[in-house]
Image (cartoon, rainbow, N blue to C red):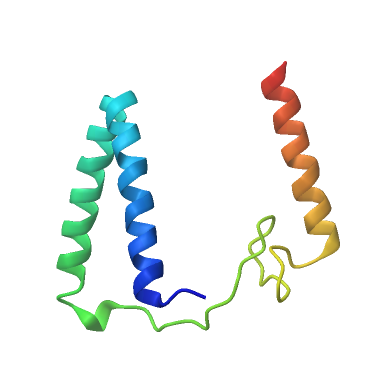
Amino acid sequence: MPTKEKQLENTLTWYTYYADYIEKHFYNIHNEACEFSDDRQKLENEFSQFPELEEEEEEEFIKCRECSDEAEEDSYFCSDSCAEDYKNNLRFERDRDEN
């Protein structure tokens, strides 16, 4: 398994390639995304000056992709029914987009 530094480097490289593609093919969206990111970063920097406003850290857990409850270990869903609902919703959206 790669080190955290290598994982971070790989992630940053991927995002660089992604941003380059968006900039080349979807210039307006790229500019809007840059502006959004700049504004968001400014807000977060201002927020970090007031640590008393930060929420208490919650226990980290994986959220179910269907209902956002805590997912089962080694899964993206909290139950088989949520997994089935998610699959059916994807199928419905795919069929809708194709027609």
